[in-house]
Length: 146
Image 1 (spheres, rainbow, N blue to C red):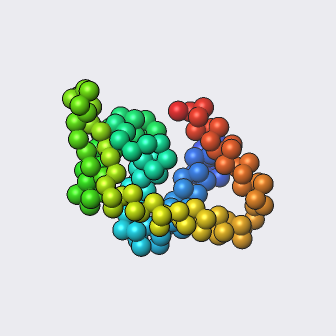
Image 2: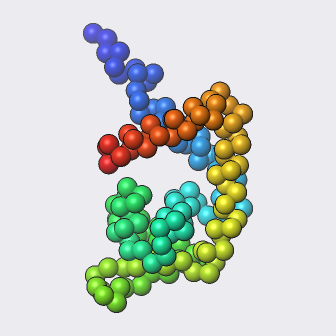
C-alpha cells in the first residue's frame, strides 16, 4: 500500500523547515560581523522591542521556547556581556534579563539586517505584496498553533 501523505513533497513541515534554515543562512554573515548567533539575535530583538528588564519566562514565552532551552543561551549571552541576569527585587523566584551597554549598541548595527534580507527576497519569485501576505499567513499559523 502506498501512502502519498508520507511523501516529502506532501509535507507542510518540510518547506517551512527548509525555508527557516535557508533564511537563517542568509542572515549568518550579518550575525558573524556582530559576533552573535541566530538565537541570540532573537533574544536581542525581544529585549530591544519589548522593554529592557524582562523576565526569563517572558522572553521564553515570546520566543515560544521553554525556559530550559533559553537559560543556557542567556548564560552564554551574559558571558559575552550582551545581557545581565539578576533576581527580581519584587519576587526572588524570577530572573530578570537586562541589556548591557554592549547589547544596546548592537541594535544600531543590527538594524540593517532585516533590510538586507528584504532586498535579497525582492530579487526572488514573490512580489512585495506576496511576501507580506506570506508573512501574515505564517504569523496566523504560528498564533493558531501556539
